[in-house]
Amino acid sequence: MRVSILTSSSILVLAVAATACSGGAAAIADSAGTLTPTDTTAVAAISCDTPLETRAANAPDQQPAFVGQTRACGVTSSSAFEVTVLTNALEFPWAVEPLANGDLLVTEKPGRLRIVSANGTVGEPITGVPAVAAKGQGGLLDVALSPTFDSDRTIYLSFSEPREGGNGTSVASAVLSADRRSLSDVRVILRTLPTYDGDKHFGSRLAFGPDGKLYITVGERSDTPMRRYVQRLDSHLGKIMRINPDGTVPDDNPFVGQEGALPEIWTLGHRNVQSAGFDDRGRLWEVEHGPRGGDELNLVERGKNYGWPEVTYGIEYSGRPVPNAVTARDGIEQPVYYWDPVIAPSGFQFYTGDAFPEWKGNIFVGGMKDKFLVRLVMQNDRVVGEEHLLADRGQRVRDVRQGPDGALYVVTDQAKGELWKIAPRP
Image (cartoon, rainbow, N blue to C red):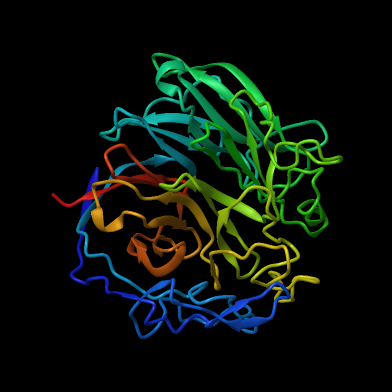
């Protein structure tokens, strides 16, 4: 087990409405997509001379829709913390789920589910995990505890399922045995449509809301022919779904009863959602991969359309424009924040713990491309500061979760993946 200490003497300076970071345009798109002056009096900003990101954008002609939508001011935490490497013996871990006793459930993409103890002991693979199609970005993905886990020991798994005619993202419920060695009563409660024999953009995260419903994110598989499904309501691709814990559909979902629509759909127009979670007000947020430019942070609202592939900040990997796409359109939601160049975000945690009072209300997001942990300072649902932590470790951050102790737990996307505990310096 390795421990390192990180400190900083820099202090955050908040200035209400008076100072905006120079990285954002002082404008907002109206319903026609035209930029008009923004009223900044309701948004706080962090006093700074330059934004944290100063590299050339992939799409330099694209302009943000409002102040602070991209290239927030760089900030530095004043909280001293230590990073403990609990283990470096995980194979491409994808998700970490803290347990009440301090232990952690961890998925490994090749298809293994393990428990890592609070002191870093790695348990044997838990038996009974469904078969996975471990190819490309597919495999065993997220794990979530039932809201009633303490009494029923039920967990939920998302995974790329091998199927006849093509694989697809599925979600299963299962009961963890009392000795925590096996799963029983494994039931697939959602299978996405259509199936597709590809290996990219499964993008599946699980999050239980305060309403007791299970929210499920699904990517769109990246290939241009598959994009047409993102805006279609007869497909799960590029959607966030909402179901009951038993897999049935809540009556108040937005598309229930609409002809041709899958009733479990909650929102549409997503590209490759890599994480989702709820804030202290019970609202759902998600982060998703854009194309070349335009990774997004979105506040998710019932029944709304988030644009892809018709509205995006970014370009194709080839360098060409996304066909027929614009950055704003009537009826399409704007991202709260976007990154250009991209960070390849994965993992999401709205921090509510007492271990780091300075971080309360901040959002933490993993960065896989540039290999750091992102801290976003939020004010009135806007990003007013951004910090990149742990970049010196040079590891792709796949997931970040808050434990019951207020510490942050991180897994890294590597063949010898690590599990970190970020806690206050003693």
